[in-house]
Length: 175
Image 1 (cartoon, helix red, strand yellow):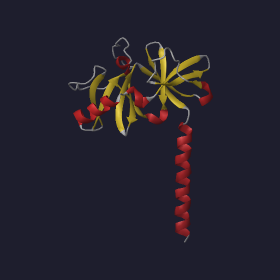
Image 2 (cartoon, rainbow, N blue to C red):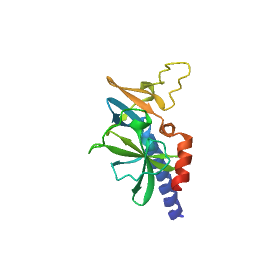
Image 3 (tube, rainbow, N blue to C red):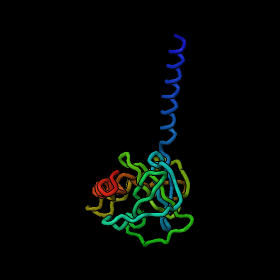
Image 4 (tube, one colour):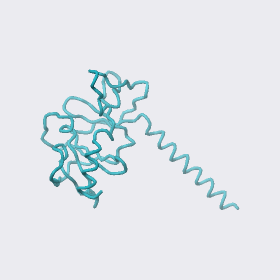
Protein backbone atom coordinates (compact mmCIF):
# COMPACT_ATOMS: atom_id res chain seq x y z
CA UNK A 1 0.00 0.00 0.00
CA UNK A 2 2.83 2.37 0.79
CA UNK A 3 4.38 1.76 -2.63
CA UNK A 4 1.17 2.61 -4.47
CA UNK A 5 0.90 5.83 -2.44
CA UNK A 6 4.51 6.64 -3.34
CA UNK A 7 3.78 5.92 -7.01
CA UNK A 8 0.64 8.06 -6.92
CA UNK A 9 2.60 10.92 -5.34
CA UNK A 10 5.34 10.53 -7.96
CA UNK A 11 2.81 10.63 -10.84
CA UNK A 12 1.06 13.65 -9.34
CA UNK A 13 4.41 15.41 -9.03
CA UNK A 14 5.17 14.54 -12.66
CA UNK A 15 1.79 15.89 -13.81
CA UNK A 16 2.39 19.14 -11.94
CA UNK A 17 5.90 19.40 -13.35
CA UNK A 18 4.63 18.85 -16.91
CA UNK A 19 1.89 21.45 -16.40
CA UNK A 20 4.38 23.88 -14.85
CA UNK A 21 6.67 23.35 -17.84
CA UNK A 22 3.86 24.20 -20.25
CA UNK A 23 3.01 27.29 -18.18
CA UNK A 24 6.64 28.46 -18.22
CA UNK A 25 6.53 28.43 -22.03
CA UNK A 26 3.38 30.54 -22.20
CA UNK A 27 3.96 34.01 -23.72
CA UNK A 28 7.61 33.17 -24.48
CA UNK A 29 8.95 33.77 -27.96
CA UNK A 30 12.25 32.93 -29.62
CA UNK A 31 13.25 36.05 -31.52
CA UNK A 32 15.42 36.14 -34.61
CA UNK A 33 16.50 38.61 -37.27
CA UNK A 34 15.80 38.78 -40.95
CA UNK A 35 17.47 41.90 -42.27
CA UNK A 36 16.63 44.84 -40.02
CA UNK A 37 13.44 43.33 -38.61
CA UNK A 38 13.04 41.16 -35.55
CA UNK A 39 10.59 38.27 -35.64
CA UNK A 40 9.37 35.86 -33.00
CA UNK A 41 7.91 32.38 -32.85
CA UNK A 42 6.41 30.67 -29.82
CA UNK A 43 9.10 28.85 -27.88
CA UNK A 44 6.81 25.83 -27.48
CA UNK A 45 7.15 25.18 -31.24
CA UNK A 46 10.96 25.20 -31.16
CA UNK A 47 12.77 21.88 -30.87
CA UNK A 48 16.34 23.16 -31.17
CA UNK A 49 18.62 25.71 -32.78
CA UNK A 50 21.57 24.54 -34.85
CA UNK A 51 24.21 26.17 -37.02
CA UNK A 52 23.92 26.10 -40.77
CA UNK A 53 24.46 22.56 -42.08
CA UNK A 54 25.29 20.91 -45.37
CA UNK A 55 21.97 21.08 -47.26
CA UNK A 56 21.07 18.52 -49.92
CA UNK A 57 18.84 19.95 -52.64
CA UNK A 58 15.61 18.13 -53.46
CA UNK A 59 14.25 18.59 -57.00
CA UNK A 60 10.86 20.13 -57.73
CA UNK A 61 10.47 22.00 -54.44
CA UNK A 62 9.45 25.64 -54.07
CA UNK A 63 12.41 28.03 -54.38
CA UNK A 64 12.36 28.89 -50.68
CA UNK A 65 12.84 25.21 -49.73
CA UNK A 66 16.60 24.85 -49.77
CA UNK A 67 16.55 21.06 -49.39
CA UNK A 68 17.05 18.62 -46.54
CA UNK A 69 19.61 18.06 -43.80
CA UNK A 70 20.58 14.94 -41.90
CA UNK A 71 20.23 15.75 -38.21
CA UNK A 72 21.33 12.82 -36.08
CA UNK A 73 19.91 10.34 -38.60
CA UNK A 74 16.65 12.22 -39.26
CA UNK A 75 16.02 13.82 -42.64
CA UNK A 76 14.64 17.31 -42.05
CA UNK A 77 13.42 19.71 -44.77
CA UNK A 78 14.77 23.25 -44.43
CA UNK A 79 13.40 26.47 -45.82
CA UNK A 80 14.95 29.91 -46.07
CA UNK A 81 12.54 32.24 -44.26
CA UNK A 82 13.94 35.28 -46.13
CA UNK A 83 13.04 33.69 -49.45
CA UNK A 84 9.66 32.59 -48.05
CA UNK A 85 8.89 36.22 -47.28
CA UNK A 86 10.21 37.32 -50.71
CA UNK A 87 13.10 39.24 -49.17
CA UNK A 88 16.52 39.79 -50.73
CA UNK A 89 18.69 36.65 -50.46
CA UNK A 90 21.38 36.74 -47.80
CA UNK A 91 24.71 34.95 -47.93
CA UNK A 92 24.89 32.48 -45.06
CA UNK A 93 27.58 33.16 -42.48
CA UNK A 94 28.71 31.91 -39.07
CA UNK A 95 25.68 33.56 -37.38
CA UNK A 96 23.14 31.99 -39.75
CA UNK A 97 21.02 29.46 -37.85
CA UNK A 98 18.46 26.78 -38.48
CA UNK A 99 15.59 26.84 -36.02
CA UNK A 100 14.10 23.35 -35.93
CA UNK A 101 10.37 23.51 -35.25
CA UNK A 102 7.65 20.91 -34.99
CA UNK A 103 4.85 21.27 -37.55
CA UNK A 104 2.13 18.63 -37.45
CA UNK A 105 4.54 16.40 -35.50
CA UNK A 106 7.12 16.71 -38.29
CA UNK A 107 10.44 18.55 -37.85
CA UNK A 108 11.10 21.44 -40.23
CA UNK A 109 14.14 23.73 -40.25
CA UNK A 110 13.81 27.50 -40.67
CA UNK A 111 16.94 29.27 -41.88
CA UNK A 112 17.25 32.74 -40.31
CA UNK A 113 19.97 35.41 -40.29
CA UNK A 114 20.58 34.89 -36.58
CA UNK A 115 18.78 34.10 -33.35
CA UNK A 116 18.47 36.97 -30.85
CA UNK A 117 16.93 35.85 -27.55
CA UNK A 118 13.91 34.39 -25.79
CA UNK A 119 11.54 37.13 -24.64
CA UNK A 120 8.41 37.13 -22.54
CA UNK A 121 5.59 39.00 -24.29
CA UNK A 122 2.40 39.00 -22.22
CA UNK A 123 -0.80 38.69 -24.28
CA UNK A 124 -1.80 42.26 -23.36
CA UNK A 125 1.36 43.43 -25.22
CA UNK A 126 0.39 41.61 -28.42
CA UNK A 127 -1.76 43.47 -30.92
CA UNK A 128 -3.49 41.89 -33.92
CA UNK A 129 -1.69 42.17 -37.25
CA UNK A 130 -2.41 45.40 -39.12
CA UNK A 131 -5.05 45.17 -41.85
CA UNK A 132 -3.54 47.00 -44.81
CA UNK A 133 -6.28 46.29 -47.33
CA UNK A 134 -9.61 44.51 -47.54
CA UNK A 135 -8.04 41.49 -49.24
CA UNK A 136 -5.01 41.31 -46.97
CA UNK A 137 -5.09 38.50 -44.46
CA UNK A 138 -1.50 38.55 -43.13
CA UNK A 139 -1.45 34.77 -43.23
CA UNK A 140 1.92 34.39 -41.45
CA UNK A 141 1.30 36.89 -38.67
CA UNK A 142 0.13 36.00 -35.20
CA UNK A 143 0.44 39.61 -34.06
CA UNK A 144 2.75 42.46 -33.22
CA UNK A 145 4.51 42.17 -29.87
CA UNK A 146 5.62 45.22 -27.92
CA UNK A 147 8.77 44.75 -25.85
CA UNK A 148 9.90 48.01 -24.26
CA UNK A 149 10.47 50.43 -27.13
CA UNK A 150 10.87 47.70 -29.73
CA UNK A 151 8.44 45.72 -31.83
CA UNK A 152 8.63 42.02 -32.65
CA UNK A 153 6.71 40.58 -35.58
CA UNK A 154 5.16 37.40 -34.18
CA UNK A 155 4.67 34.54 -36.63
CA UNK A 156 2.31 31.57 -36.78
CA UNK A 157 4.80 28.75 -37.30
CA UNK A 158 2.37 26.34 -38.92
CA UNK A 159 1.28 29.01 -41.40
CA UNK A 160 4.81 29.82 -42.55
CA UNK A 161 4.49 26.56 -44.45
CA UNK A 162 1.60 26.14 -46.83
CA UNK A 163 -0.35 22.89 -46.71
CA UNK A 164 0.76 21.99 -50.24
CA UNK A 165 4.40 22.37 -49.15
CA UNK A 166 3.89 19.98 -46.24
CA UNK A 167 2.20 17.44 -48.51
CA UNK A 168 4.95 17.71 -51.11
CA UNK A 169 7.66 17.28 -48.47
CA UNK A 170 5.90 14.23 -47.03
CA UNK A 171 5.72 12.67 -50.51
CA UNK A 172 9.26 13.56 -51.58
CA UNK A 173 11.18 12.48 -48.51
CA UNK A 174 8.70 10.00 -47.05
CA UNK A 175 8.32 11.71 -43.66
